[in-house]
Image 1: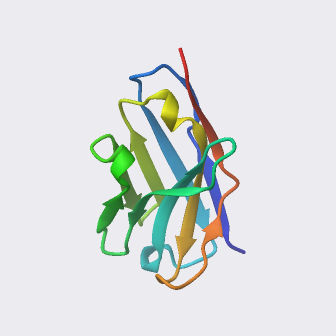
Image 2: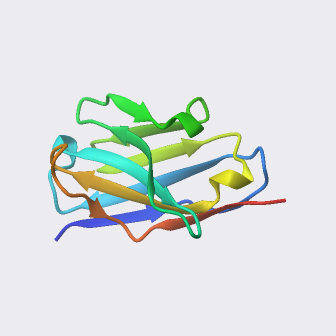
Image 3: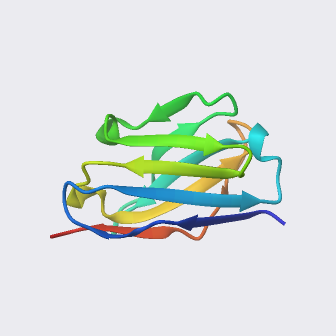
Length: 117
């Protein structure tokens, strides 16, 4: 059974940092493309960052230079390090895992990130 469990969200002040984790099980983690998406209230879910099995990363322009995606194959966990957070980063953050670029993602339940003073 495939499981993805996000953690690490919370309330943070503007300019602060958070690290999200997504612990997974039930699939061959090291072979999968992993990603972080986010969905703000009233908006569509958007891609934030992707990391391939070879650890090649893609970061969306709005967070480039502030967010970093990484993976630990030994722990079957993917991370999203978020720095210099702004209120515009407030959203539910979801991790996804898929076997190939054309495949559908498995999803976690999401973790709320709120950036506010």
